Amino acid sequence: MLLLLGGFLVLMLLGVPVAIAMAVSSLLYILVSGVTPDVTLAQRMIAGVESFPLLAVPFFILAGNLMNIAGVTGRIYKFAVALVGWMRGGLGHVNIIGSVIFSGMSGTAIADAAGLGTIEIKAMKDHGYSTEFSVGVTAASATLGPIIPPSLPFVIYGMMANVSIGALFLGGVIPGVVLTLFMMVTVTYFAHKNKWGSDTPFSWPQLGSAGLEILIVLSFPMAIWLMVLAGLSVNMAVVIGLGTLLLIDWYFDFSAVMALMAPVILIGGMTLGWFTPTEAAVAAVIWSLFLGLVRYRTMTFRTVAKATFDTIETTASVLFIVTAASIFAWLLTVSQAAQMLSDWMLSITQNKWVFLALANVLILFVGCFIDTTAAITILVPILLPIVLKLGIDPIHFGLIMTLNLMIGLLHPPLGMVLFVLARVAKLSVERTTVAILPWLVPLMLALIAITFIPELTLWLPKYMGLSK
Image: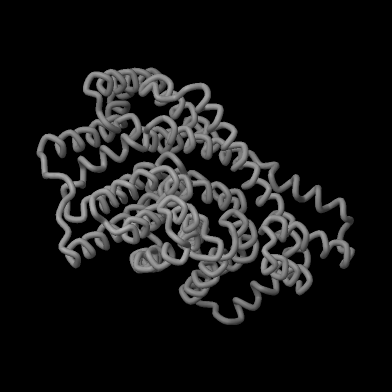
């Protein structure tokens, strides 16, 4: 255990990338201990990515990239301005609502920060907000990306923990709302403290138009249900519904109706059993291509090709981390290190609430140093047996783990959202870190609520019959 974990930590301290550090320390352990033939390294790394759910990873990444080049981010921003821009600290609220909507399409915090963040930070600075406040609210709202479905970390966790990815997606809905409310309350506090006004004048027509867009999107599932009750097949009802929606959107030229439909299609399709989470990722790509090539006509084959190559690069990076983490996690189990760590944690407490508090500290610490995918792959084999033994629902624990790791993305030394926003805002990493610090308060309060009120996570999956 000391060789495996010690080698990994030493390589990390030397600045070796996390995936290579895990692979090299695993190889050293195999060569020195002789616990298994060295060819096992390659076999286990390949086995780590031989998983159907992992096919969702490249498709969700591609969908996020396509949404960015399709001009969807600009339309989402315009819609959010109409909906909440008239409130005090308006663009702070716009930043959060925009992230809520984009989260329903991208599935990653980094895509949110890089896509909407570029638009939001520039607009906020143009309206007189400090760079620090603009960066702080953008960083905090980016954590919504993997909480509100769809979510790449949920796909990885669901595969590792052998739990329903669809249930994890549904479990993230209410926690996502809780996070949104906590962040909007924080913006309101800063607005009153600094005596900020609204950024756009209150307009009933604009607000009514935004409300109408929401109403149209929410009425879509009801319209499908009514057509099915009238005797139409589900497929025919969906075709008629989408055709009607497209005509309405084309005639009135709404800002974001078609973009708002993305999470409805994905979550609705998975809930009704039309497609698996992996197939939902493909549906997200098809929907993104439809918006960019047909509805908005903002894509070209050159931009689609660029998005595809960006996706290949990101996917290769993510899956290499998964392969390296797979052999590392397997060796932790084979060497009894995972069992020893589990026994040690159980010797400290048998109370599930105390364990969850300790797990929060551990995961948050790990998330500051290790990539999200690697952290999930390493920690699940160690912590999940304890979770099951203490009677904690693994879906609930998946939300806790993911939110902790998202908060870790905002911290040095390896917080990717931190570095992305530092580049976008042209701030030093030190100033970006200081800007983010006040936003840890609402995030930590939301984490406490989600940790100790399990029904926030579990009620919706239970209601939809995806969890016991």
